[in-house]
Structure formats: C-alpha cells, structure tokens
Image (tube, rainbow, N blue to C red):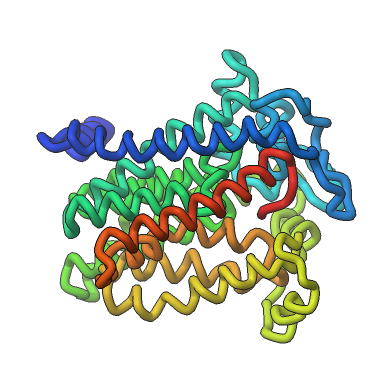
Length: 390
C-alpha cells in the first residue's frame, strides 16, 4: 500500500511539462513574496500594535525589531506556543484555549524548531507549502484552462489582500497545499493519495475536514453520479472524518471532557448561527478592520456568497462544492471575525475572475492587479505591525 501511494505521488508530480510549470509559477510566487517582504520593511517606520481593547500578546511580547516576529501575530502566537509547550488544558488567554487549534502545523513547527527556532520554522513551512499550493493549483487548472487563465488565477491568489498570511505563521499555506493536492490527485484518479492528503488537510485547521465534500463530489462526478460510486467514495474518504475525530478524541482524553473542544470554541469564538440582524449591526460600527464587526469582513462574505451561483454554473462540480463549503461555513459563526481571511482559501472564486471574458483584454488584468496590490500593501503594513486584519 505504501509503495503504491509513493508511485502514484511520483507520477503526479513528474510530467514533461512540470519544469516549465515550475518556472511559470515561480516567477509569480517570488514576485509576490518580494513585494510583501519589501512592504514589511517599510512597516518598521510605522507605529507598532494597537489595543483592540484587549491585549495583543497572547503568548509572549514580540521583539519589535525582529523581522520574524513581525510575521507571527495573533494566531501565529498560538501555533508557536503549541510547538514549544504542547497543548495546555487551561485557557491561555481570556477564555481561549490552545486546543482550538488543530495539530498538524504546530507539530511540523516543533520538528523544525530545534534548527531555526519555532517562529522561523513556521515561516519556512508556510513559504514551502505556499509554493506547493500555487504550483499544484496551476497544474490542476492547466488540465482544463489555458496557461494565461491558470497563471492569472495563481497570481490573484498570491496578491489578494489577506494573502499576506501565506507569508506568516498561519495555516493557510499548508491547508491550501494539502487540499489542492488532494483534488489534483483525485483528478489523476489516485484516490489513495487524495484520501491521505485530505486527512492531513483535515488536521490542519478546524474546518479542514470539509475537504471531504469536494473530494466525494469529485469522485462521484467522475463516475457518472452513480449511487454505487457514492458509496465507494464514502469508503475511500472515511479516513478524513476519522482524522478529525481522532484529534477530538485526543482533546477529550487530554482534558477528561468529551465536550472540551466544542466548549472551547464556543467560549473563545462565540460561535452560534449568524442572522441578518446581527450582520448588519456591523454597518453602524463604521470599522473597516473591526475584530468581530468589520465592514470589510462583512463585505467580503457577501461578495463571495453572491458569486457562488456563477461558480456553480461555470466551474467543475468539485470546484463549486469546494467554494460553497469554504464560503458558507463561516456564516454559521456568531460574528464576522476574520471573514476576509477565511474566504481567501476559496480559490475557485479567483478562477472565476480569471476566466471571465472582457472587452478590455489584458488591461482588465493589469488594472485588477494594481488594485489588489494596493490593498495588499495596506494589509501587509497593518499585519506586520500587529494590527488587526483578520
């Protein structure tokens, strides 16, 4: 079984066009990274931190002069804490507990930390996984689209305003690499690899297990929507929910409480169904970057949901399923905190944008790129000064 998975993965990533694809993706990837790093150096000239009416420093006070520490605010502190100290039963900050954060990313940080330190290890993983994510996305899209559309999609992902987290101690890079890799493996009909990568994606973040849905849709669609195929898909991908329940079981054993994870999420993130009268209260707050009531977050959620019908009509069923689950799930939260960052992982939205025809030709691409880069500049300045963006 192990040998079979290895041979399948070798086939996935070794084709005659792979070297050309690497070069095309690398140009875009390093251009975006150089841009973000340059902006981060400029951020040293701006004021550091903001109150948010609460203490920013969950784990330890950052070194303001440290370039590495600049890229580990907010969630980054939690992952570094877990990597250095392991999970802690008691709340680490107010009512928030480290058990809210799934284990794969901090475990990888802990493995690499003895060599370069925990924060730097997180950045190394994010940079490597980020490149893997956009490379696999490019290869996945090239099976149906031109090099221009695939390249534009990758570029829009890299320069979206909250894409700065791909350069930070955050899980987005690792999750995207594993989730896109799973879909790419499925497209090659390497279902064992797809299931394994899906299980790893499920261990990366709290909603990661939802990758099960687009993978099942992908398998079902590729087998002509037969009921027997749906049953086989359930058997193949059962490892994904098992991975999630495995972590929840670990938390229950650690805390002695089978409801520990659910209670920690409810206490720390105030999760309950979001209704319109809650959402539109945010408009009266007049805060662009509000912690739980930001206008930008609400706007992003509305726009991404509004584009879902077009995605369903134009894109492959598994892409539509992916976009739907990773957009709609956050509407269940009782607040809009971090929505602009959360919906960013829905790369089918960027594919939709890249493939839409326009009478402006490439001018549309360059104007959109300029707008996104301008927004990315502002978000990077805030983020690397430990000011809230999501």
